[in-house]
Length: 384
Ligand code: AMP
Image (cartoon, rainbow, N blue to C red; front, side):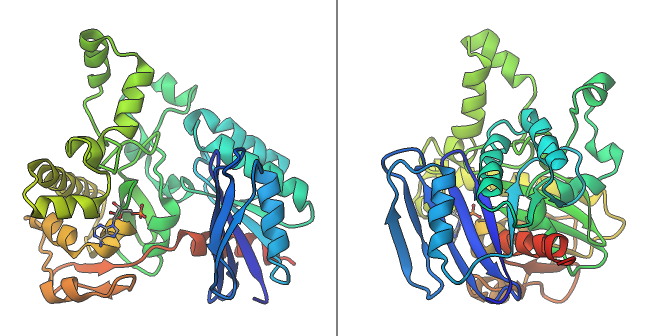
């Protein structure tokens, strides 16, 4: 690894990390989890491809990062790239300066669970490695090219001007990565535990399904996606629920999990259960596919031409069944799936699965870490 970038994604009690070589051909990756508890540990893969498991009782983010970096030995990074969910109105990845750190803090009300955790990681790495260039790569930045008619909500103007209430969009690194070599109009479906769709024209996001928060849009593992905005007042008036209970239900107990009557948020489990005759699982899959098709249809009106569709994320990359089922709902588009190519595409590989007529259909495994490393390299190391 001649030049390597350390990519970090900090959660409130975890750090996902990857050391990516400049040609992206080598990776060391893993997860420090249960931080600040006696069960804190690091699980990962070493540069030799060996599994690594290390108990680090009561370690905090900074201690875990310190241990990790010491274990990398000769493979020390030349720069650090931080995944940051919400960049507010920042339009691209930025080198970390006190001003950019402040902008990330300012965006905290828009991502109250994510940004504070990212800031813990940023502050820890800045203390540990004050001489390494560090870059923040934002999930929201790719969508800053959306036109105003796509990002404004139909609510009183002052909520936008005084309180930044607008649509931001998320999964930007993934949508950007999978569409990076595509010309013309493309729809991208990132389908994982969190899921979103995006319309991209000549490499620029023109609309997306997620909004102010990563909750808007299509059905996800445990998130409801779009609901009637009056559901909140319905539950408050009729069931006496407060906003925290409603939020928790919509975030953690809904989506595939809620639809399947708490069977699972995992698509594999639902497909198996459906095949064994579980009606709730069958309905959850049907709603997921229908709402996905509906979202893609709606986004298509933002594109002057429709040249293709990309599937990515754990479900999009691995489930030929979901890809085929979803496409049966897109009647009015001339997509033609090649069933054999769809069914036989090896896991984890990129491939074109249309029958050669109509818009193209691709499966492209996402690589958010690789994209973050690439952007970090461009910003941090071009002037070294
Ligand atoms: P991600 O959040 O991108 O890691 O994706 C996680 C989702 O991908 C889970 O719902 C998994 O069940 C789903 N997934 C992974 N492999 C498959 C598969 N072979 N078939 C269906 N879903 C899958």
